[in-house]
Length: 117
Length: 110
Image (tube, rainbow over all chains, first blue to last red):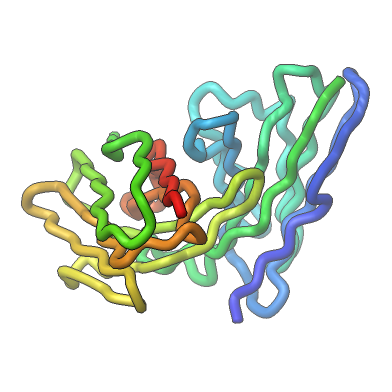
């Protein structure tokens, strides 16, 4: 149980393109989803926390107009990288949590490798 | 703000050795601590989750300990195998979010 599916697994596109990444909880309802970014040989850095039906909370230094997050249902959150540039190339990972309590574990997707040419 | 440090950053051992990976944190007011494995270019695989009230968890050849008073956790891997080669991340839950260490890159040589 507690499977999180992330799609696509890899994206290669031209600079200026907008890219949408989907994160789905397949067998549970996720009130909270998280989006992380990981640069090569670095750890995961939290970008934003997404609660179903409300606006996402962004970490300091993350541009909310560049990284649009939508969490319209209890099983789907999307991250759209708008007008992507080479410096946005990274590994993006989502996670989902069942209930709105910090002691519940997060379940992670397999990540999306984004390469901007 | 929670700071999570993992030492060493990289470790290379011959097959069969027992080894210990370290994780330290600055804020002991945590809910849980979790150890993950990450293979190159892949997502995270959860290995062990230790609740705040627990001191250790075991799964097969893996044993994780938690000492909140000293702000430390260790991941012990017994009888290491080449298939254990990966990056190991520790992560802490507190204040509604999760903070990761930078990881330890483990290489187990045949």
